[in-house]
Amino acid sequence: MLNQRRGDGSLRHLITLEGLPRAELDALLDHAQRYVCALGARPPMNRALAGVTLGNLFTEPSTRTRVSFELAARRLGAEVINLEVQLSSRAKGETMLDTIHTLESLHFDGFVIRDSEPGVVAHVAAHVAPHVSVFSAGEAHLSHPTQGLLDALTVRQHKGVRFDSLSIAIVGDIKHSRVARSAYDVFTGLGVGELRLIAPPALMPANGEFPDGRRFTTPEQGLRGADVVMMLRIQKERMAQAEIPDGEQYFARYGLTAPRLRLAKPDAIVMHPQPMNRGIEIDSEVADGPQSVIRDQVRNGVAVRMAVLESVLRPRPVRA
Ligand code: NCD
Image (cartoon, rainbow, N blue to C red; front, top):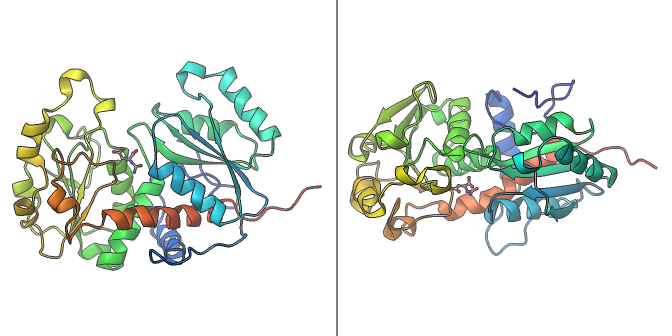
């Protein structure tokens, strides 16, 4: 695995949350919390990253993540350019590194990368110049670290900082979900009391994965007494045609409806990373209901990305 730290131990890249110590996760979340602001208020801005240039390289669709990285960078005074560049196998090897080195010559200080191929983000990180940082905005089915952090921040805002007293249920297509993997990393890193995985057998991850998760094949068993219910989108783009579950049947067995949500604690919160398939994994009544914190997740995305960008791209000397 790529070392995402500098020689002094500070984070140089953010590619995974795996192995981040609790104190570091807490510090990032505290930092992000300072950037959270009420809707309708003027968002906090500063010049902490003035003079820094970031490139957004997204080769998979994204709305929320791309826009919120961009807003986060701009609110810290950085320059952001959306780059139309191919990174994956189609352009691997020389071409990809040539592209990166060309961009370095144009004084890019960091790249925010989303790609469907495992390893591309780390490959770029391993080959960029020492002053350049790489941020994952979603790597294949493997990880989505800033989503993990914004999910943790959302839980903390509603349930407090004591994760050891919480039972968190992740429901749906866990097998193909980078959101679930980063959620697992951050929640276990923060010492969660209990993590439950609820999925049909075909969408359950392999046995060696999520070692601390308790597995359930029905929401009726798995949702009982949960404090947090995190729903996932069915990742059709990561499945063979034959694997794709029938929407109506899936909703009947696994969709989060109001009666199913009543199995969880009365004050349980409902999360979803979006985009949502309403009527497949979640009923609109629940998605738009009083227990839903889905909009808080989006708002927290900008704050978390500000904290991550600022922590990693610490002020650099201005070169003549
Ligand atoms: C997620 C993603 O792309 O991984 N979306 C997001 O970043 N908010 C989840 C998904 O697409 O299901």
